Length: 408
Image 1 (cartoon, rainbow, N blue to C red):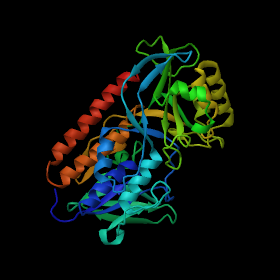
Image 2 (cartoon, rainbow, N blue to C red):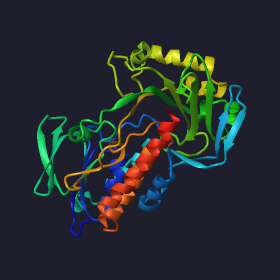
Image 3 (cartoon, rainbow, N blue to C red):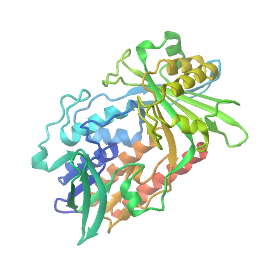
Image 4 (spheres, one colour):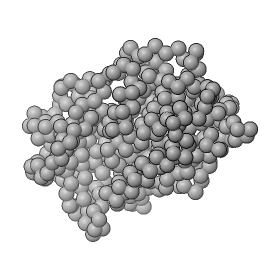
């Protein structure tokens, strides 16, 4: 795509941005990431995710430190109300955390030092023209004379600036400002359920509970008349859906006794219900549309959820809920697939800004890694932009169709 170094601006600074930024830097292009968050380290929420095939391929090719980043899940099992195994899948999954991947990718992008990667690769960011800039909120983009002008606001000073780029990547997530600017008809829509999430320290979990889980990804799904966590295909029935898996510790430690048990609990909750209003309102009375971060959930609502867990979940799952210190909750939203490129393919939508998936096993992260691997081929001239668009959209369309069927 380019024989001379490009000036590339990436909007947003999460995992999607870092995957693409690493590829661009390694190919010798100049790259600047503009991240709205003023903090040098983004909050991870403590969320666990699965490292699927494209993430694994990306790390194998681009992680220069080889940090152990995952805990192996030795299979998938489905439990009944009395903790008995109903069925199993004999597959192994690498489980990691958002924080670990973020720190590894930052280390490989700009030499960021963290407890996860205290000895990052030595990167001369000035010589390579690589930067990760915090506290910059992108507000608009314009296209003229084959250059994209990115306008952004400094969060601290409220001053506006612009930067010109040969290529812009919109990596600003499911609530993308740039997508709203260029594709205003693609409105985000709540799909009818929320996800309660949290982690429990492995050391605080009873041995009998750990024996039940057996280092496997574990699911509990049950018809129920009171707690409603997922609709079945028959809308007259309701399902409880709860899953857990083991992930590395907060400091990245993968050794037994230092890990965490991650859980997700889905709950059907109509947007026009008082219950939805209550659980999406934080301790200060502010109502949220997407996520209430750890520490923001009203203690009264959390106590109600813990009591519900004791009444309705198998003991091992209920125990994890009781021993979670920092729960958070997300309203699950969906949106139509965005147009992939604008401005003669000088602006590309990637990751969640292109396609926002429903809950599943790390498809968003997998999508981001695949897109970055394909971008490398695009920039090297191995494929054209049409092929890049076709392959990224094919993944997004297939994943959206599969998971919407499962979760509708």
